[in-house]
Length: 243
Image 1 (cartoon, rainbow, N blue to C red):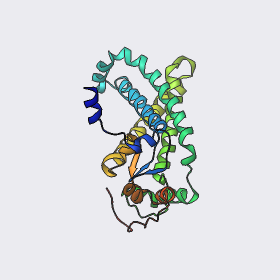
Image 2: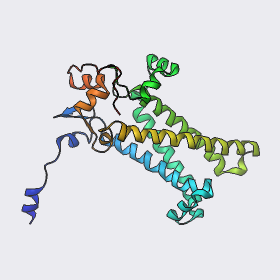
Image 3: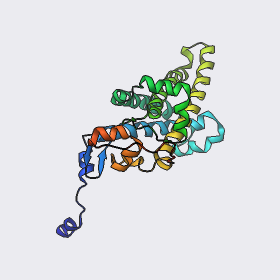
C-alpha cells in the first residue's frame, strides 16, 4: 500500500517549492510573486480583521445580533473583539514593514491619483501603462489607506476599551471615528476582494500558491514582467478593458 500510494502521489510543483522562500523568480510558465512569509502575513491580517468584524458587528448594532451566537453570546464578543483588534494591529504592523519598500508612490503616481485620472482608469481596469511594476498605483494607495485606517481603528478602539480614562468629548469622538473608519475600511476590503477575484482572474492564486502566470504578469504588470524575465513585453492596447 505505501508503494502504491507513492506511485500515485503527484510530484511536487517546482513553482510552489520555489515560492516557499523566494519571490520574483521564473519557474516554467509561472512567476513567483509572493513567498510563503508574505502570504502568511496577508492571511493573518485578513483573518484577524474578519474576527474583529464578526465580533464587532453585534456590539455595533442589534441588527447583527445574530452574529453573537457564533461566539457564544454578546458578552463573549465584547471580550474577544478588543483582543482580536490587538492581533489585527500587530499583524498589520508586520505587514507594513514587510511591504513598505515596494509601496512607495512615485511622484508621477501621486500626481495622477491627485488629479483623478489614474483613479478613473483603475476603476475601469484599463491596463494601458507599460511601466507598471510589481504593484500599481492603486495597490500602493490601498496599502497606505489600509494602514492609516488600521491606525484609526486602533486609537479609537483603545479609547473605547478604557472609557473612564478619557473625557466624554473624546469618547464621543472615538465612537464616531471608529464607526466611520470601519465603514470605509469595509469598502476598501470589498473592493480589494473584487479586484483579486472577479475583476482580475489569476490574482487570487498569488496569495494561495504564491505564483502567477507569465501571461498575467505581462498583462497587468508589464515592467515587473520585464524585470523578472528579461523579456520584452509589448504594451497592451490603449483603452482596453480587462474585467
